[in-house]
Image 1 (spheres, one colour):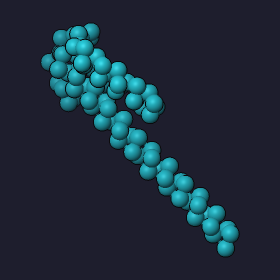
Image 2 (spheres, one colour):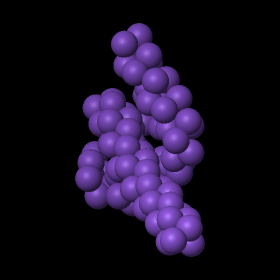
Image 3 (cartoon, helix red, strand yellow):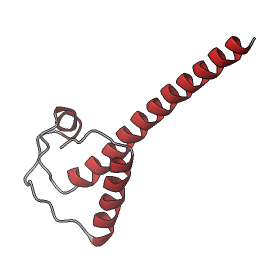
Length: 90
């Protein structure tokens, strides 16, 4: 009986880890999409093929200028990405 309890507990932990990893991946994508939207609004030229596909080739800068509010939001996004260990994209 004890072996069954241990096996069920391990399975539960593994399942929780997989669910958590999936949630983190979804959150990372959401954060990257928010970041890309701010950059795209300022004509940023993306290197990332997915971002290029989504926002097109109508770009004109690699160093966009952001408002104070945009800069604060970008800092929040980057902090969240760092805490989730999100992959870096351009």
